Length: 392
Image (cartoon, rainbow, N blue to C red; front, side, top):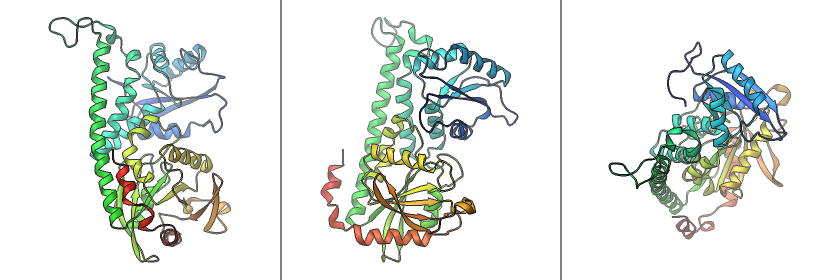
């Protein structure tokens, strides 16, 4: 994320210090635990974490001059190569902090973009990451680089007389965004065609959603005996994988899709850029909302997933709550019943406790899916015209 030679940690990773500012908002991550996981996933060694309180962001330095001086001394003390903020910074704040600290400064948004760029494997995933990156850069053009202030133009130069470098760069970014959007639209049409083919076959569509690192890919592999990449890390899966799953209880197959995980403060640009992938959730007949039952932030993570589902238009899709990682839940927190219901946004939602790792509870989950297939869906319920209308 930064250019040139940088100090490194003993394990040869660039050194970062994490900064979080408490503005009195609920569920503030005072330990910066999630930002720490993001930084480690992006390839940083976290040397220190600093939390401060403010009533409102400082317009120039976000944290104010006094705290900025403290961060500067701390960065020198631990030989940091980068400073990462848990909140989004404006282009002006980012530029001013970099000038004051003499170090690259980035926010949570760019850390997530960096991880996505590292993890994207499919053509679609790479296009989505590229679009989000271009959109992020376009908001920082005027603030970041001094060379953009130089005038260019006249004979032998691109652009018209007096056209500034920033105008050239902005036009190049606009063209790149347009080209990337066109490519993604093509991918979206291809996915819509695949969904229509499944609809013609009478396929019931199930989409796995949930907070990142809740065990979605492990559950997907356990249900369909697939080999989708699964790891104990944030955003292990970026590309949607779809397989057929046979339900003996319903004596039919369903289409099961594994999707990208959600996270708190997911950048809006990423939600927009990943609309082609997230469309699998919008078009699903049933969502398996996977929750890390061992997490101390269960309710906050569930609320964030619900918020994103509403944002992408999947808020009304029926759900089954899958409380995963039962094997990691302490004995005193073990559920009395492995199958029950839970209220979500005023509605009673079926819930099942499972361990995708050990296989415990998976038969109960299959029963719940089979019940939904039998009682809530028929091919006539979603006519082909609905799918035709979703095509761009």
